[in-house]
Every structure is written in C-alpha cells, then in structure tokens.
Length: 292
Image (cartoon, rainbow, N blue to C red):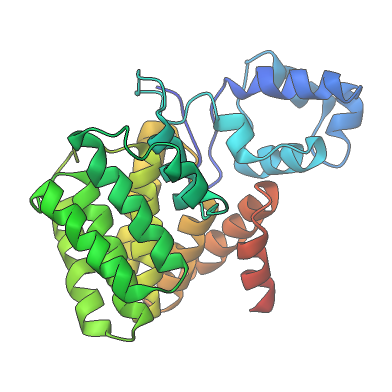
C-alpha cells in the first residue's frame, strides 16, 4: 500500500518521484540546484527514481521550491475510486465546498430544467450552501430541509450529512449554539457507527471532518474536535488523498492544546499545518495562523 503523511514525518507516496522529476526539468533545474538547502543531490536522485519516498519536511521544501501544491502532487490519486465522469453538478458542488462560489448561480441556471429526480437533492444542497455563504440563514435552512425530504433523512446518505452540517453552521451563524450542536452530534454519531457513507466522495468526507473539528473547537468541545480531526487524518491516510490536510492538522493542534493528555503534540500538529498551508498556498489559513 502507498504511504502518506503522518504526524511523525514518516514517508510519503513513492509516485511523487515522477512529478518532481518532470517539474524540475520544466524549470531547468539540476538535481544539485533543487537539493540546495533541502537535502543531498543523492536524495533527490533516489526520490526521482522511486527508490525512496521523501519525508514530510523534505516534500514541503521541494514543493515550495518547485511551486507545487499538495493538490498538484496528489491530484492523480484523489477520488481515484470514482469511475464515472464528473457531472456538472459534481463540479459545482466541489467548487462550493472549496469556497469557490463565484458564478455558481449562473452555472446552476445552465442545468435547470434538465435535472432528474435523483439530481434534485444535490442541486438543492448547492443552493443551500450558497445561501449560507451569503448569510441568508433562514433561506438556507428552508432549502436544506427540502434536501432532507429528498433523502428521507437517511443517515447513510452523504447529502443528509452535508445538510445536517450546514444546518448546524446556519444555526451557529444565528448564534443558536444548542441547535448547531444537535446536528453536529448527529453527524458524529453516524460517522462513528457507519464504516461507509453511500455516494460520498473523499472531498465530501474530509470537508465534513475538518468543518466538524473547526466547529467543535469553536464551541470548546476539544475532545470532539480532536476525534473529528483524527477521523479525517486517518481517512486521508487510508485513501491516499490530500484534501484539507493543512486544516485538519491545524484543528488537531487547537484541540490538543486544550487537552492536557495530548498537549505535548501541539507544536508537531501546528508546525505541520503551517508548512502544509504554505506548500498548498492556503492564504486564508496562513493569515489566521500568522494572526495568532
């Protein structure tokens, strides 16, 4: 099985060698030039020949020097289990979960009138998420309830869980923390009890994990935040995917800082989150971390 990032800096996937080699050649760098201030030329040679895999710290420095993000180096393996071509709605949902909501209404208008019944829950979910980002909380809650009517609130359906998540976020926006906690707890219970959520992508699962961890930290439920971040990190490790690794490590850092039995791991999680955010050009997270 291909290895991936762990908190102790252990090895990463061997397939990275080809990506590093191609990018280095594209930038007209020698192995010695790439290795400067990072590692030895021999190490770069072994990485490119797939003889060894880089540690976390070395990979981050290589990415920064080559102008690569972690999404670049893991892109061929993210959601690799999906064999269907991405639909228009899938593409819009992905962008919305990545907070790229520009022109979403225009893109949705292109599919209106062309959707079947199976598409409606995803279509309405996207609309509900956009309304949440626009702080139209009441409208968002109304639309998310429509999604739950489509899914019949089936807890093993990803659109049910995402609806619960954004209902919780809407209630947090309205400062109804108890109501938010109710929906977050329903998600946590489902993910603890079920080994598989139907029709879920890696992006959706990891988005839920990092958002739950962030929300629980905000509410000072640090044990729950830690559990959600660890669920996400373990899921990413098992599936060889890189979505939100910087944010998951950051939320883990915040949670362990407030857990006496885990406090010693704070700097490890925090530093890894910082370098991952830097390598992945996550300006929003970097701004937050620099402010602290």
